Length: 339
Image (cartoon, rainbow, N blue to C red):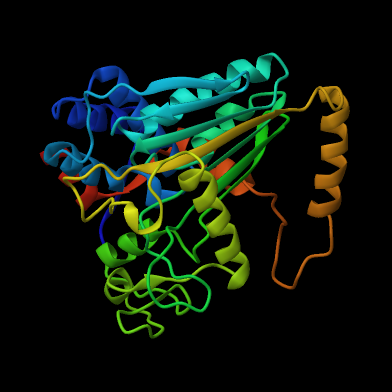
């Protein structure tokens, strides 16, 4: 097991921002990219945290990420925009979408943004939480390079294709952020790096057989969660993020880890739904609180201490990280320092 050390969020940010800046990224953009990664680590979503920074830097050095590109925003209707990332860092394109949707939300407008021709953007909850704000519901989904089989299939034709929904609740949010595969591929890379076995049911090996080997899984294919249900959602995400936006899809998307010299050309689909046209926010909050109270106070299974709503555990981990620091594998930190 790799040694884990605890470091304050601010110190870790400083180290990581420096690594990006020394590879040509502007300080403003470096701060944004690292903020998404640090927040992922603080929320316990380590598969989308700073362990990806060496991958990003390798792609920058080999031309797979165009750090000079500035996303082009095209308004296609009163409340629809299309963003051409031009090969930029995925976080930069995604934040452009967040800004557009936030402005629409202030005017009580339902609005959507499509993003094409960009790269991996990290944890989707980072963006939906910011789209959501106090009075709106945020949505985002993204396709990815094919690593997952269709239901009943044994070859990669779809990405892990995550989606996220954020609903405001008091000072926090109810946030769903999940891959449509049984697990995010970043989690398998994490298991492989730590020399751990994966649960059977996450993936098939190269021959299409179930495997507990992280290495074999990375050379094989991931499986959708809940069989045909996860597959169906993944296909919808592929259509919204790839087909509809004009971005690449399925086998047209290049790998985050393997094709370091090629723009991935992933797509995002983002949306905002204001609450107040339906009812005032106070009424909504009261109704939501009653629902969550019913759920959280329902009868528990044996051995279960508490029922949590989506995003509650991650929010607690985030608050804990503010005081105790972020637990990071020393190997990853040393690698970033050496870049």
